[in-house]
Length: 104
Image (cartoon, rainbow, N blue to C red; front, side):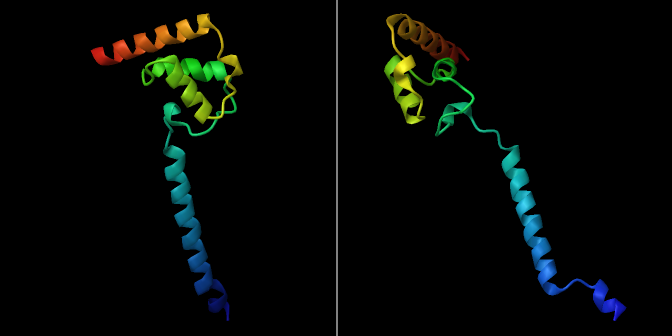
């Protein structure tokens, strides 16, 4: 009787395997660091302007309109993306980032 209490039941072994399988999957996912330029939705910790400057510095976008389109796709509020000074500043950053990216 004592020996039968010490042996795990078949259902318990399967349960332990499932937990082990899940923990390894969680470990693999936690090691993955997503590319900030490939976010599909808005990052709750960044303002529209912060994200705009981040995207501009990435060198992926060629002009202000492409940048606005990306921000809109990520559900950012585009009301902050107004004004000629901001447009010029972001365009210069994008141009510089793209020029430097081609030199590497």
